[in-house]
Image 1: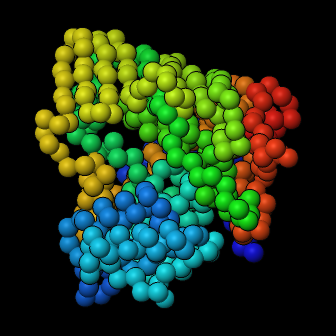
Image 2: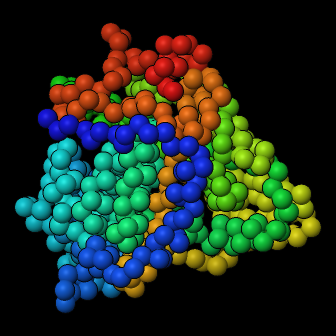
Image 3: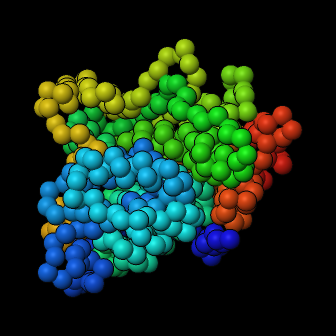
Amino acid sequence: MNQPNQSQPDSQLNRRGFLKTTSTALVGTSLLGGLTIERSAFAAGDDTIKIALIGCGGRGSGAADQALSTAGNVKLVAMADVFPGHLKGSLANLKNAHGDRVDVPEERQFVGFDAYKKAIALADLVILATPPGFRPIHIEEAVNAGKNIFAEKPIAVDGPGIRKVMAAAQLAKQKGLRVGIGFQRHHQVGYLESMKRIHDGAIGDIVSMRCYWNGDRPWKHPRKPNVSEMEYQLDNWYYFTWLCGDHIVEQHIHNLDVVNWLKQGHPVKAYGMGGAAKPRTSDDGEIFDHHAVEFEYADGSRMYSQCRHISNCWDSVAEHAQGTKGTIDLQDGGSFTIKGANPWSIRDRDFKPKSPYQVEHDDLFAAIRKNEPYFELDYGITSTMTAIMGRMATYSGKIITWDEAVNSPVSLAPETYAWDAKPKSLPDSNGMYGLPIPGDPKWVKKVV
């Protein structure tokens, strides 16, 4: 059996130390002296960037397609997944789309819980797109091996995972590695133009924010006969907290990240409530279907956050801010509007821009080729931690501080990663999974 990596030592990580770590990201990277071996993207005499794909599902396959669509010589040379069918299907589609840019013979197709190590060793850049619960150990392995990284968000699901990634981030800076994180809004025209104006004072001092990801529930896969509990949960990873972090972490994180970007910082405290309002069935797993969290920033301003997976309700995927000189509305559909002293609006479609999912790869690969600093992992850490702190607040019913969240000893991961291993959450005799009960001391200990 493959033992999970241990979390970082339990030295307390206070907010001041964490901010000092994350605020020096670009400076620390740009001041690195010389060109380390790890920072050299290609083998001697060859400008081809070799890619390994870790996690061959829909998002991983999409990220690989975008990486292979970047300028210059690129080649997919290795793939890894726990499900052989995912790997084979992804490989066939990528080969059909990109031809000779895909060179993954059978000996470079790796299946199993330790497959990521074998694939990472063969690449210059790794795409990490498995369920998020595995992201910390995959980032750690890639950094230790000196590989550039594109990692999907979120980058952890609990405090021990965040601390592991924080340690990896510091080593990645020392090695001069480039790291991209799948927050594509940071590469979207409307958001970029909006942030320029906000940070130049177009709406004045920001006093309150709102953000939403309210919509229907995503996919689900019925339980197949004769599969282990581990296989069932991996096949339905979105519905298990150790794998996805709940949808406030896996999905609503995009909106929380935008507000942190807007505020140029992260919240210090969270108050929340949530639960499962609609009748539950066994295929709903162990996550809530709604979360509502009030986040407090260091300056006293508040962000009011909602995410919901319930049909036939009002839907919204958007962010809003109120300032002393006006307001701004940022819509995922591509409409951005400032009202007040400095009115302005923009629609992405007016510019016919390239997809931000493609641009984020174009930017990362360009930085690698030019040996320029490129490091998105710091805001990957703070935005992921914001979402985790929100979930801790809704699950526990308690006020959760940033320091408590970062230093939480609660690990959601199973003791071992193997098909016959038992996840920590198991169904009862009716096939139902338990839900956190806010305020219940027994559950609070499992959360905080």
